[in-house]
Image (cartoon, rainbow, N blue to C red; front, side, top):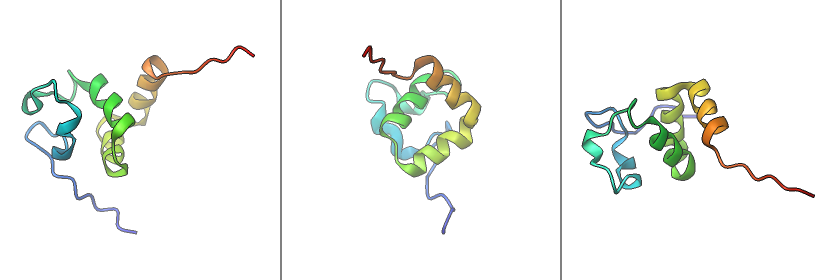
Length: 79
């Protein structure tokens, strides 16, 4: 299994192939810390496996899990 990443990072350390996820932002000026909520949200929602691996490497499992607990969509069924 080849685990070497083929992602190309931009100057702001974001993968260049995720720019399309942020059409309303100036992608080149996005900041890993300032925009972490929207970055986590959109990569979890629409990212590839490779982008997900980058996400967990960049933010860590604890930070991503915290975001999911605080902001992730939950379905509550009252049966």
